[in-house]
Length: 470
Image (tube, rainbow, N blue to C red; front, side, top):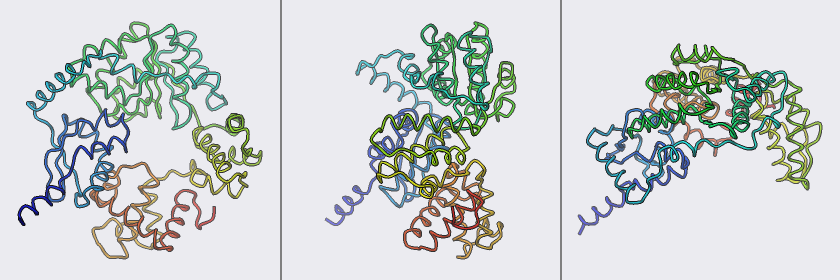
């Protein structure tokens, strides 16, 4: 009797991988799930970790670098004692068996959809709202705009056209506008470097490289967004190089966007960077005041038409946003949307002080490059400890709390992954990083002094302020 009860309890505690997969799909989105997470197989559960299996080393590295912390958190929601996840690579026999199962399943379900239709065209959508006629120009982006227009009128005039600039400057808008203008009479492929990489890996796994080559090398206009994400993938860069040359030879137009100039790309083959530099290279700089003002006025006008019964954004607030939000066009639009949301929620137009609060995390952010080193330095100065003490393995209370605070601020103020943060804090495990973040979040709920300290440090890091004033 007792044995049966114990077995029953043990069975109830077993991890249901189907539930975990469903949660991964909900939390991380269908596209990420179908592209990367669907092929994760549960192998075995141990005392405090689980073993999972993936088809290739590339998929394992991709998942580990981008989604591991979210996956672990989802698992811990169901089983708190799991503190880490390990992966194994499927052996050759398993890959063959899985391939046979997929073929049988596709045949039984009549899913004999062509490789090209299923894999590429669904990611080749041109956004009809990103056109040349609604791309506002100023001194910072006029050259990129003119070059894009020229390419649309006379393909292969500048080949390749390489547009670079920071996040949210309008690079994708221009690529989309080119594709929209040329798609009536040309075969267009508009794809991100990340998606190109995924299709390349998928083609290798399914032995469809011939179709992959045919599709990309027979296009008339190839637009690739965010080429910097192709870094370090040598085999894929080799294929891209030959595709690039084949398209140039047949007179196809290539347009590329990136966040930096060709010679600044890291871990990209020199011959590819040389090809990029051989065409027209133009940059989009930060918008000047006149362009920012123009964008704010246009966006405000659009929203006023959309919400004609709502509170109007005053000229004072428009001028303030145009002056203070200097990082990117995307942040300008985001700032306007926040003000409109505030007006709709409270049924009143915000005054200047309220606007500063609503936009607090955007103000002057372009003037402050938040790095882990900066966070560590300011936290150490705040708590009056040395950086060596913070990064040491010592667990004295006067060191642990500043260390956890620095880790927490790094997590919320930078885009670094948990493993990356761990490396910067003396190679600490990502589970330690998660614990630190959770500890500070819990303390903030009950400790007003911790909230005050976090706010002061955030202001010092983001705005170079030494107090808690905006």
